[in-house]
Length: 445
Image 1 (cartoon, rainbow, N blue to C red):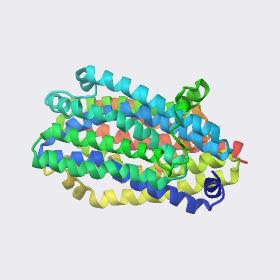
Image 2 (image 1 turned 120 degrees about the vertical axis):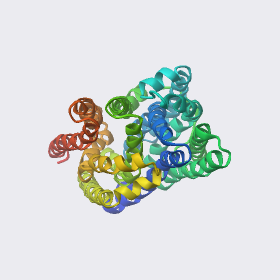
Image 3 (image 1 turned 90 degrees about the vertical axis):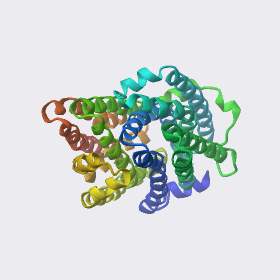
């Protein structure tokens, strides 16, 4: 692990963050095409209700696969700190436990999803004409979710090894496959929503298999060793103490989706759900640089925390916030200038073209400041401080956005939903900045 120590522990922070964040950004950007491409193709080739159906179904798939994401992020934090402390044995044991946990839990939850698909779809907002289309789509992509869970587990581990380019490739592979198969299955074969679901499911499988190939190859320093599959209680507790944050956060996102779809359907219609579907896809795509900075921050901060290099940790925090804030401001300016043009990519439906641009502008209002909230919560996760990381992670989606999205529409209709986003962003960012400043002053002297 000497090469890793020579980079994460000694290289200039700004250069190191760019090296880590750029591949993460590209990977997230390309991976988000899995959802964007489906939305674009079904919007143009199937219809408005198909966009609404995808908006309902994908959060369910990501809720299940977030088990792998949580195990991956929790375990990668342990691995980063173990490598920083030159404890290879703990890093290898953690990795083996991650694989075993992901496989067991993802299969259990996918099985439950198959048997209780209709009640689950109803809960997430598949109302009225949306339900039959959503059922068709869900019935196919659910079989690709275990592969997605494994991919989400493996990706942060690859970054923890200091191999951000391979993590990027792992997210590029499924996006390319999904684009090609969507054209083939929807346009050429005319398989409709079933074809869209099949393309997505195969793309999930390709991502999982690529990551498996990486860990089996000589490129990985962490090896798949069967004896490390034996679950270790202490390792499991540490993984879930940190990774549980991600799972709970995704659970909060899922509850948020239930509330959003309820409010949008009640105070608007199926069209309002489709409007949010487009905004949500754009949000995931354009915010990928900010999320990439956050992902790049985690292994750098985690390694240097483990190596007790406090000056480098503080520098990493400041530089990450600086980069992310600049990127967030550029993104917001782009949204202001091109808000109408972006919607044309997804649909030519007159109602969506009329209602989406202004709603999107409101949702993105606080984009320039969100990096402070993301880096603040990520720091505590990298440091292995589960409770503050959990609270800060839940501030936006769980503590502020859910009640706002439920209450504000009672007074302001559908626009109450849109205004919930910037209000939640501002409130959560203010609190995170105060907590992070106190932590740096007290513990990073």
